[in-house]
Picture (tube, rainbow, N blue to C red):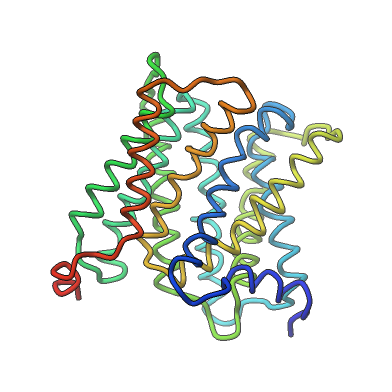
Length: 309
């Protein structure tokens, strides 16, 4: 049922070369690292005013390519499960992020999206039956504060609708990640298959939303084609294969905190490529966010593990 060549390459990358946690964590972290390039690619290569079209091209072609590689369609309950996960992780995530970015300074929107690990820590209690960890909440708050210090400027303004969209964006993907962990993968479906189902479902959801919100697609020149190709292959197919592999094989709260890497990478690229500067406050925030990411990968103390169900 599967095409042997390309699927083995993607699934092997998604599975990692070792069953240890560190190699899988490093591979999973490549996904938010790739997503962190979205800002500079969008501003420097893509036509302005069409972020949803960029999201559509990041999702749907990558999903269809994954389906062509794996030749595996959902069965039974996985038709609606894949649709729900695709809409939560991709289809709703992009429009909500777009609304937040439209109505808020980029730094504020990024900081609200960084609240996802906090939401995952809370959702893990009813959805996964895990105990509520104060340690995870503290480091989650620390990560949000760190990202905020890096990306929020002194003249940041707040808009009620934008704040609501930013928080909903974090909650939507957090729920998608938590449900992905709960449902896992059906027998015989590798990470490429799961990514293909969700990317396709999310992309199909984005088709009417994109054309209703943005109208006709923009003209695509060579720089834009390169940008869309990068978003689709690196930020879409490869990133989501690695991400969903990590979600299904690692502790979900450890994976969730890795999303903090995305705004940090965007900030570094802005400094290196766009001439943006880092002050002392930004450096302190960067260190705090990195500390939260590292702490999120450490095992819980023995006493906490003994109390968890």
